[in-house]
Every structure is written in C-alpha cells, then in structure tokens.
Length: 344
Image (spheres, rainbow, N blue to C red):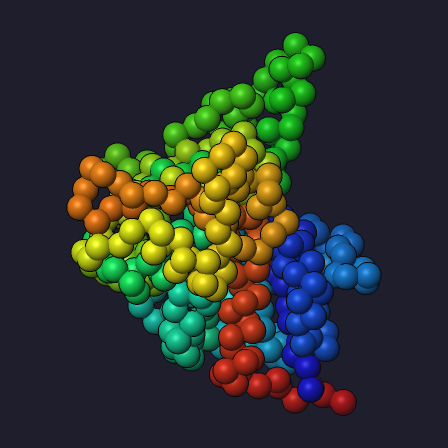
C-alpha cells in the first residue's frame, strides 16, 4: 500500500519543486495533495503529467495523511505542524521554526540519517537551512576522516533562496538597467542587479546575521557541537544555486589528494576539480541537479592541517525540496512509518 502525501505551500518555489521531485523519484505515493492558504484555493500546480488543484490548509483533514511536506514559512509551521503531527502525520518542515528544538531531529540524510528515529516525540522533522545543507554534505566525510576543529565559510547565495518575489525583483531590476528605467527594491535592502549584498536575514546583537547564526547552530547540531564555525552570507545576482568558499581546520593531518578521494566516494558529493579554466562547478551547472558539487580542493598553508574548497548546490533541491523527500524516503526505507489504513 502506498502513502498519502500532502505538500503545504504547493504554490511556492520549493513546494513546486517538491511536487516535481516526488514524481521524478517515483516516490511510493498513492495520493498527493497540494495545499496552501485560502487565497491560493483552486490554483493549479503540476505533479508529473498530472495537474493538482490547490486546497486550503485551514480546512484540510489530515487524519489519513501519512507524510506532510511543509514549505509555507515559519509562522504557518509553528501553528500547523503540531496540529498535523497530533493527527498522526509526520511533518517534514522546511522552515526554521523547529530546527533547534531538542525534541525535533534536524536531518540531512547523508550526514545524520540515524537521528531520524527521534521524530516520534512531536511527529516533526526539520530540514536545515539551504546553505547549511550543502555545507554539511561536504564536511561530514572529511570530519569522519580527520576531525574538524574550525570552519570559516563565505557564501554566495542565489535570490531563489528568498522566494519567487526575490527572483522577480532580480529579473525586473536587470531589465530596468538595460532599458534605463528606475530600479525598485522591495525584497532586498538595496539593489541586487549587478550587485552583491552582504546581508541575508536580520542582524543580531553580535553583528552576525540570522542566516550566519543558522549555519553555525545547525552544523553543530547535525555534525558535532565542538566544531567552531564563522560565516559571512552574501546574496548574489544568481537565480538558482548557492556557492560557498570553505576554509577548514582539522585536528589531524589530511592532504588535498586524500580529501579529493574521500569526497569522490561520499554520498551526495560530486567532485569536479581540474586545475584549468572551467575545471570547477558553478551555480549554472548545479541548477536542476541533486548533487553537492565540490571543486578547488587545496591545502591551506596558513594553518596546520587546513584545507580550502568550493562547493555549489541547487538550493531549491538539496537545500530544500530534495532533502525533505530524502528524509521521507529514510522513514519508509527504515520502516519507521507505515501507511495508514485508508477508508474504503
């Protein structure tokens, strides 16, 4: 018997990507339901070669739903995820609402799949921040080999991480530059077209932004609380795909060649690392792909046991939709859930 899956936030960038990936991966779903707020009722979204009409979250009965993929923002998740979980449905949430809750597992399947079993306390599993997800996929196999002490990461994050309105703003501003029209900034604090913005999310008291704090806190929770991490998160005028320049300091020696071999064998990683023009991955190549691409692996001579690398991934896929569906696959493959008996 297959599963009944609800996608909440089905009209958004990530929700639509979830529907695409459920179909692509032939997820064992007998029924998929698209949900959103009341204002999106009746909107049509694609699920493979089928078309689904969006239903209102507020009126939906989850009693026969097995898995809910939640991508409707933190406030919606805070209100609805506990209610949906109480109905016996496992919620896999893409927002930041539950990530640091000690009773909610924060999961990247390639990194800490075993922690998935802890979902039963609240029937909620959290997806990490998009920039953290690709980072820990690259760090995990290296940490297992040589034990990471410290990470300094600079991110180059695409506008799709801020939603459809942000993508529209980059498009309209770029068009305005070429047509000599006024550039209007609504989604970003300053223009994004032909510019970079060293702020993602709000500033905190210590001068870091919330996005930078998320990378630190989530890496500690998923990988190792002893790892020290400092991040600078930057929004760049790219539509899809986050890039990261990562400096890593290890407790034990590790060479660039060893790291390359380890990462080539690691789940979720794809090494493209030739010392020649174009011998590396960019967001353009990563868009639409599942892997975390790793390039520019080299030794850092400024610290003992240091490496530097470049990693790129499609933030809508591995950073959000794909990771959520991989978590659902872990639940099924490890027999942590079974399909509810549906009414005849």
